[in-house]
Image (cartoon, rainbow, N blue to C red; front, side):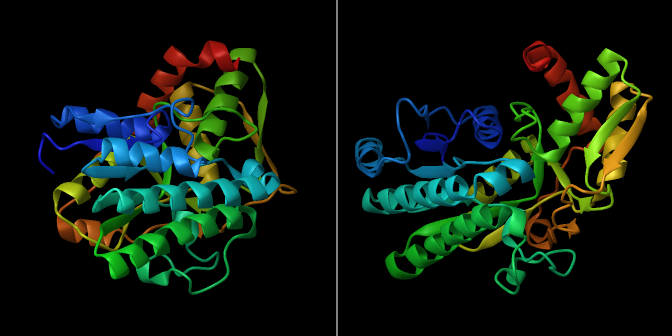
Amino acid sequence: MTKAAKIFVAGHRGLVGSALVRRLRDGGYDNIVTRTRAELDLLNQSAVHSFMQAERPDYIFMAAARVGGILANNTRRADFLYENLVIATHIVHAAYAAGNRRMLFLGSSCIYPRECPQPMREEYLLTGPLEHTNEPYAIAKIAGVKLCEAYNDQYGTQFVSAMPTNLYGPNDNFDLESSHVLPALMRKIDAAKTNGDREVVIWGSGTPRREFLHVDDLADGCVFLMESGCKKGIYNIGAGTDVTIRELAELIADIVGYTGEFVYDAGKPDGTPRKLLDVSRMSDLGWRAKNSLRDGIAQTYAWYRRELRDQTG
């Protein structure tokens, strides 16, 4: 990418999109195009096509999506499937129609089978059944990946797909009804410390293993892929290590300074038993994550206390 390139970041207000904008600006890319949902509804096909024809960006980072944790995914299944399918098809086709050839499509590690061999390699996609609780979101993301591949094959575009592991960081969602596990635990543990609660209830058994990546590392990996000239394919972006949910809760408690107990509600779903990405493709290209989990959580907690604590209560 040249520094003068026009770059459209879809979803720039979200966790990933805001990190991408920070990373691009830090890298000297000044011609960044963004639109709020009020300015550009990605569910509106004609609006997306008109925008692409008018702006004709040189590069696109497709970070816009309907996202959420187990509760949101499992209770709003139609919304997650429909909205993510529509967003992907609108942007991919409108980009092609406007002459764009370079795009990075953001997927998710949940696209891999529930009982996937660990660590999960890119070629394991579509080799087994998906985890039921987030199947609609996963199907939409798989469709987006395959759409990029199909446009590459038929039209010669250079659309690359990045599959991030579980993310966290500034601008994360801390709403307990829709957030992912790390921000939800951070909010609950912080509230328990503030209120003097003796225990915190955690969904599930605490035994599932998860990999966590600071969103700034993901943004760095995505920009690295585009700068390196990768023209197609799927690339896992992760930390390469995982922890149990119990270990995660204990780490957050240590950082927050909470000394109470954890109670595990085994009646609630655990989700996939383990999710660890094989990141050898990125490693072979020369990229690795920089932030340790402890340092990343400490940074995120400082941001949460500064920016959101009074709002979330």
